[in-house]
Image 1: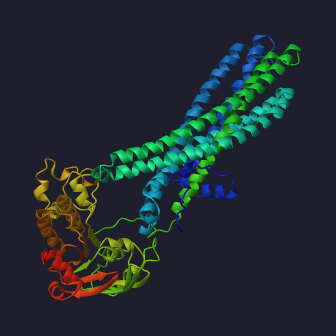
Image 2 (image 1 turned 60 degrees about the horizontal axis):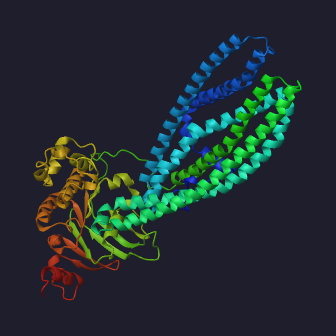
Image 3 (image 1 turned 90 degrees about the vertical axis):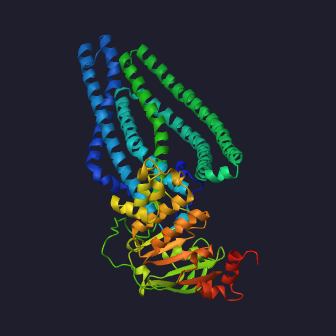
Length: 604
């Protein structure tokens, strides 16, 4: 199932229409609310109580005037009513505080559970998913879409229900106390509401366009800052500034148009809604003048009518917010329903006594095309055997399929056809987490996390002791530069290891792989970007790492693979040569021989 591509990278602002399917999509998230259902019940109970208590104030406001003019209807004094209102006010405050606290607790806890579930799901998705979905969009799912749900749960749902209760109770009171004025209100307000809805839908179109443009500015920001080194290397600061500025200008232009229409809408509401209220006020004053209504009843009518008007006006916006939350829930549901590489994240004990990946590694009749480019076959009928404990190298020009071997061995992608086996056991039959935990990769581009050197080495085995970390650092020749830092192993490496040199990052990656203690080692251009001095040190560390391990080396620098047990030469997805360095070097007209002579004898 492919994740739906939105019209923009932040389509969480799109307002969904109410439907049974939309309700079903929201109901799926009930499982995240279920642990807090008792709290939710009391929260909604307090919400109802709070809403009913609130209606006491507009009802009694008119009675205050009636009592003051000697026309009270319930036989109570001003003092008694005042004390009663103070008690009600305190009760209302306590109930409202408790309700907000409960909804905050439920929303924060449940949304945290959803965020964890989403993050865990993203971590388990296959590599082809990330080829088809941008990181910025996925980040938006976990942040803004979940925030939409949280706002709906903690604010909008409660407020929507409260406004409905206020609306119903207010209408009942008006029909009971002032039926004539209530009838007038029922004739005028529906027309206003219909016009407001039509006006509001038109405005939302501008809001949607504005959000789409704003999302694009976030994409530019994310891309440029994520590749800041490239931006600076190519001196494209001015270009990126202009690109971002242009996008911001489009947002401003749409925002101004949006503001103009929104201002018109507000003016419409003020003119028509308050005009209608004034007309009913005039009619009520006439009734008071003729003695058909008490002055206090008119005050109560005005207060309740204003509250009803505010409720009706607020319901439209609340409905919009709730439908946005529904749209967010549908996108989150799509993500949660994606097919994972494995069903759940479990903690791996790298010292567990499960079956190790010992035995001959075989690639048999491998055909493969990337899911994003199915028409291009990257590997075509490849057969390759790596005897247990041996070192082999893959050589070839760019695009020949060398790195694809690494990705297939790690089971990042499913084969189009063929099998990969270890000790004649199909690797697809081995639990994927257990399988990958026995393989280590030292890539060309080392990715370090923004913590300390110790934490980056320990990433190879999070349960490793300090002694094991130090041992791995010593074997990888890291300690000689680590000891030069005042903080030693606690030195912060900076984002992506920016504070360290290329050789230092490479050695930390080797230490990380040593700590993992893998059965199979993959070196993907591990020294191609280093200077001669750094390469010699890293090569020593790699020799330590490759001891007694099945090792697969991808290299452009052929000097680094002279001593491997076997070299396989790839061209256009097929193996065209294999043998030792000496055998292939002496082969006249061979591709390896040509490549080797270009490197070893460049002047020939």
